[in-house]
Image (cartoon, rainbow, N blue to C red; front, side, top):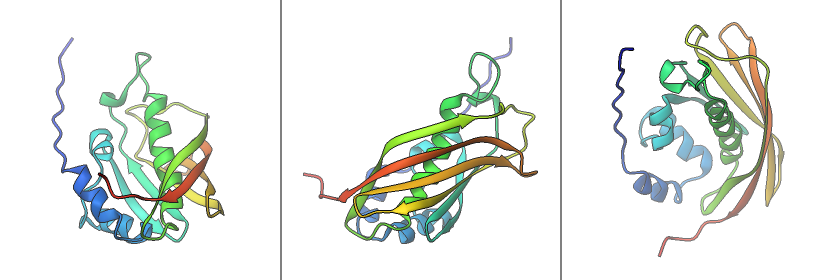
Length: 166
């Protein structure tokens, strides 16, 4: 077996989060998409990119690679959950004003086909279903460039006031 290696580097996520508390969710995500604000380390680690941000929607893309494989030789379901959760929760984030934050409270994902290195670049698209004040719901899909569906799901996000760290 040949050994493979992957090296990654990321920027301080705490500094980016502090900046994010001063901006609306949409402004913050637009800054990440444009490269003006560094992406979070999880995005760098997995190799996913925020490619589209709109009112109540967000999309990420990922090029499948063997570094994302599970023991069965397919992209790990946790990776698919992560990119789908990112798209759905960031769709909610686009509607969050400065001084408010959110976290995923519930995530439901259905896998409909495996992703491998032969799979074209995939796109996770999320859109808000219900933009509540304290709870928001979103739906999402992972598709390839041909429109083939790989997974779909829903998320519930809890929205709250953000406090400055002590």
